[in-house]
Amino acid sequence: MTSGGSFFITTPIYYPSDVPHIGHGYTTVAVDALARWHRQSGDDTWMLTGTDEHGQKMMRAAAANGVSPQEWVDKLVAEEWSPLLETLDVANDDFIRTTQERHETRAQKFWQSIYDRGYIYAGEYEALYCVGCEEFKPDAEIVEGTGAFEGLMVCAIHSKPLELLHEKNYFFKLSEFSDQLIELYRSQPDFVRPESAKNEVIAFVQQGLKDLSISRSAFDWGIPIPWDSSHVLYVWIDALLNYVTGVGYGSDEEDFQRRWPGYHVVGKDILRFHAVIWPAMLMAAGLDVPRGVFAHGWLLVGGEKMSKSKATGIAPTTLVDTFGSDAFRFYFLSAIAFGQDGSFSWEDMAARYHAELANGFGNLASRSIAMTAKYFDGSVPEPAEYTDADREIQKLVADAAANADAAIERFRIDQAISEVWTIVDALNGYITETEPWVLAKDDAQRDRLATVIYTCLEGLRALAVLLSPIMPESTAKLWSALGGAGEVAKQPVREAGAWGQLAPGTQTSKLAPLFPRIEED
Image 1 (cartoon, rainbow, N blue to C red):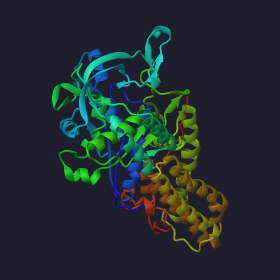
Image 2: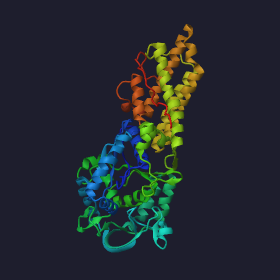
Image 3: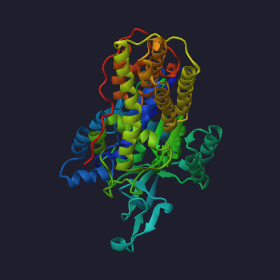
């Protein structure tokens, strides 16, 4: 991909009825890493995240805590959701809240335009509703209760009883968009990724779409419908709009044209909203559909999906306090094939931390800098003649950089890291084979020693740039120790593989261990 194009990417907006867990952290750092890579490539990048604050579940949570819904969400966002971004070193460009006036007025404008185009009608609705999902449940997700809930119909996801709702509502003519959606998936094969997610979406739409209730009249915690203020927008229909209201839809046409359409990264459980309902809403409003929807898998703990209702959520700070934010980012982005389910265990994280970060990358950085100090007074040596072993490293660095960029284009962050890691492994092997400590004892080998040390340092320079989107903190320290000019996060990532960018004579400085060993109790 050439640099300079627009790259707009979003996380789902999170529902802050409770505190964030590592699943939320996983989605957020994945989107942040993709945004950082594109930003470092010179693309006109914009990352949007935020919180979805309306709906019945929020009203009930607030009432249970004896405060108004607005007070409740303000407290959670300030104390839990905004700090999460700092904890995980996320460099988002904007944070949208659906209770902000900019969102509410633009959302009303959006639905008014769909109403004016004739895609809305009034009707009556009776269906089983899950407050946990904030969704009228399709038959496939309704099961018979057991135990305390025997004789009741429960949500297949939350295992909680469903409520039978009968309301006068407004409906969106979703059923009219089946053919257009199928054509979209056919003409843009990458619109939904990975392949398994695309197949699921196509099968769902081919069964036929039902019109969608877009309003609620039984409570008032939501955005009033512009043509009938006795109704509020159904929470999902309000939330999806953040992706356009956050980039100027309905008020800043220039910004909107510059950013939209964008990419959405979502958990697979909310895929249908993003790959079926959302593009249909955009078509109805006469707007471009998104550039693509990528659905990642679930994080499993002890074989179960993490869930707030089942108390299997782990707070990101639990891991960051022990391992650091870079290790959190590295572990979740490399240990799980992006797009598939992945299991988390503390033991696996600790093992990878020590093997790959402390002993692999961290040790390579420490000893290369230490040898530069010991043998060349900390000054980057001038390489002499390159041998085949050196040229192999140079080719490997160039290939790894190109392959990593291609993997990022496919949204496969795990594959990108795996490509970059070939450099770590190769340089560690190279040091073992060239034995610089032996060369240092022989004055006649001074030129060879200079070439070996230069090769290690220049390889580290490439690693610092390529890993900066994944591990911003440790790569900034490494960059500084290498004497790199400017900030590592501003170095062009697509040019990182070109050999010879670290100037001989550059003064390096002492490097504290990037990933100190963790003594486990």
